[in-house]
Image (cartoon, rainbow, N blue to C red; front, top):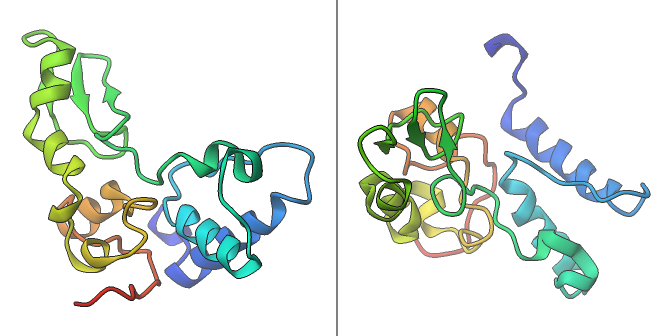
Length: 160
């Protein structure tokens, strides 16, 4: 599918379009596996002078972009626990460990939850708490799940 993927500028454009559609359709739109959307939502809300809370933005106000290993995980058909279905890193095996033990003590999960370990732009981004970048795309592009998100065009304001 490499020949079908969009580049970072098109990705940004599509997410802005998606944000603008939220007031034009009679249903709640949910961005899934699109962590930058939560940065864009906050940028646009600030630009419009809007408060971000449950009343104005529903569940988008209280969720985060990439949930891999922080508040979500994937369990394969053979009991292997991963941060998400796209980030194929074994964090534990339910045939030999409890889910609770894997969730609490997996080194990978704990590193994903420690945002100060994120690298590159993601590590210094002021939207890190809301976006987090896609950890699967970072891993696919670099071999490091803590690396910066490769499809993000945003340049953080935070000091380098």
